[in-house]
Image 1 (cartoon, rainbow, N blue to C red):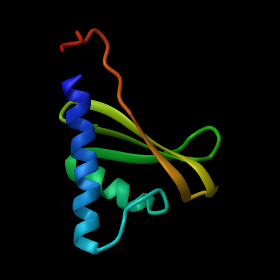
Image 2 (tube, rainbow, N blue to C red):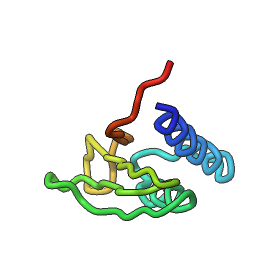
Image 3 (cartoon, rainbow, N blue to C red):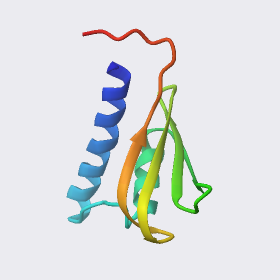
Image 4 (cartoon, rainbow, N blue to C red):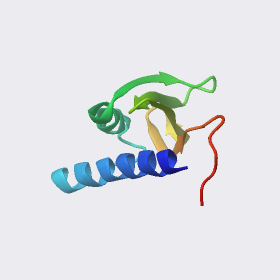
Length: 94
């Protein structure tokens, strides 16, 4: 659970830092910026889902995660960004 929270915090803070540096909000309409931020923290590649929406497959500190872009009006103009990470055999701690 802590790894998930750390991953979410790192990625969201990366978006906030980038937004502060450029004076613009990073959202689903700037997929290249999201990939760049992910690469600053580890490895990241971009591909398309079976439905054609962009998807980032990435790794940070040994944790694999994916960023899905949804509600895309055009191939690289999306309204929603979703972060997914899964952990098998991890005990939940309060």
